[in-house]
Length: 113
Image (cartoon, rainbow, N blue to C red; front, top):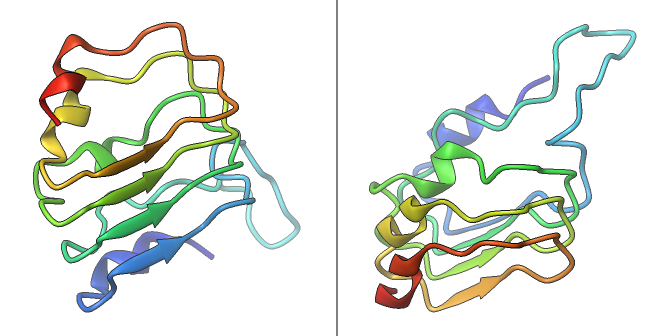
């Protein structure tokens, strides 16, 4: 299986994929492919939870300038050390949870959110 079909859910507003292995290379009996984050997300997302997924980087599709409706983003309990400057693309963001990571750097532009 794959998470790629998620982008086709055009009416989806809330997505929770917490507590999975999205940041880990997983080999199973049915697939030797790594579990990967979808290359696109539904554009109408208002809330996204990707907590507790062993992520060491914020997946690029989350930082897309196309997610203009995203208000709440939960990246807690991952392995993030830095948040990229592209976080400022999320112009509607009102809540950002970064608890339980190893963050040592935030971009200066985060204050523009």
